[in-house]
Image (cartoon, rainbow, N blue to C red; front, side, top):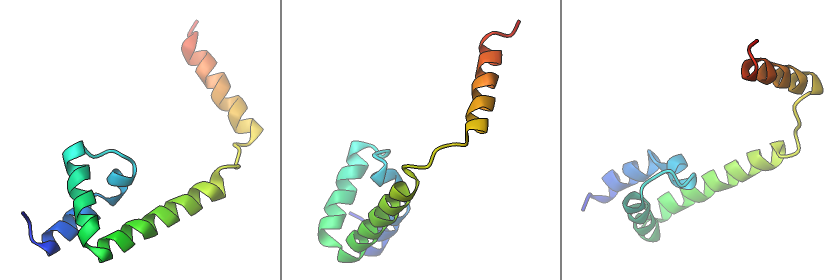
Length: 83
């Protein structure tokens, strides 16, 4: 098993992938086990979760301008039917 410093680096390099559920199950399990023993990494993960939640909340009600929606929709129609 890697030493604590190596495992902390391993976790820090994979924080976002872990939070996005983009790591394989073995990696996720290793990270969860490490988090149960390492308060510093757990605090870092919690901080990232709070940041991601705040960003998501800040932009969840943001809508694209109607002119952009029209342009994108028009482009999609033209690509779908290239006469």
